[in-house]
Amino acid sequence: MQQTGEKSPNVFSLEEQFQAKIDNDVRIEPKDWMPESYRKTLIRQIGQHAHSEIVGMLPEGNWITRAPSLKRKAILLAKVQDEAGHGLYLYSAAETLGVGRDTMLEELHSGKAKYSSIFNYPTISWADIGAIGWLVDGAAILNQIPICRCSYGPYARAMVRVCKEESFHQRQGFEILLTLANGSPEQRAMAQDAINRWYWPAVMMFGPSDADSTHSAQSMQWKIKRFTNDELRQRFVDMIAEQVKVLGLTVPDPDLKWNEARGHYDFGPINWDEFWNVVKGNGPCNKQRLNARVKAWEDGAWVREAALAHAEKKAARAVQDREMQAA
Ligand code: FAQ
Image (cartoon, rainbow, N blue to C red; front, side, top):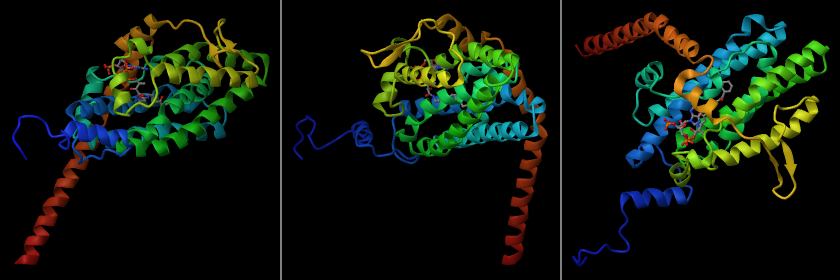
């Protein structure tokens, strides 16, 4: 090739080749070349997602011993175990990007890594378990279905099973509320009260409005995100506005109104001060949640040490066996 100092039209930089793959919907796999900022963004998002699943076990875990029947208890136990499973797939997906699980957990425990704002609210009645399933898992599904098409293979594949399980979770939550809504006046009031407290925090789960979202533009270009925070939030409001009618209950938004021209529901202003306050660690349960995770980590130290000692012993025995066979 002639050395003109100009770039040949057929020579593409690694970045250009990478973006071309993404534009053509070719999945990026762990050993493929990727820009450092893509890797970092994924570690941040998948790590935050994993932490959310694990911290997210706490509000519902609070009701396992007090579920109103054996059947409800068995269902709730299964749901909380599913969330543990989701956390583990997600930590594994993040590990394929070269970050260790211990590092991610250290960041959670020190408060450096975020987890979803929604899990910093208390579960004060049984109806909250219904509201979490219906609203929180409902929001999680809308957010996660597009991640099944995320450009990073391990994250996208993990999401397929997660979404199937979340869809069962949402239905079980709705069914709890439907039962309460058709029960005694006290049960109905309990269901309404839970919706009143969980609705807005669930609307906030989708993250800051597009104008304030620092990562959306880049993440959309990389197809980590397929829709913006506000697009998904609108879908959620539209879905919930219809489903709440089946319950015969209401959401706490006097401005919620069908807009024929837009083909969507209009909704009232979001209290972003509340959102950022919770994200910064000052929500009603932030300290309690983090303390519970740190305690679980410390209480589990002996299990990790025992597992490590066992693995070392096994490896040493394997070396010994090989040496004996060779002798
Ligand atoms: N809470 O620029 P963006 C579940 C932060 S799983 C706390 O828009 P991005 C299942 C954000 O990290 C729920 N922080 O960020 C379940 C960033 O800060 P940073 C979790 C939030 O990443 C159900 C800053 O604000 N799901 O519920 C939140 O492009 C029941 C600027 O925001 C996922 O994690 C928030 N809500 O978009 C479990 C899904 N929102 O990192 C148990 C995957 C934003 O620069 C029971 N994640 N921030 O310091 C995502 O889709 C995205 O990460 C978003 C945020 C949409 C959450």
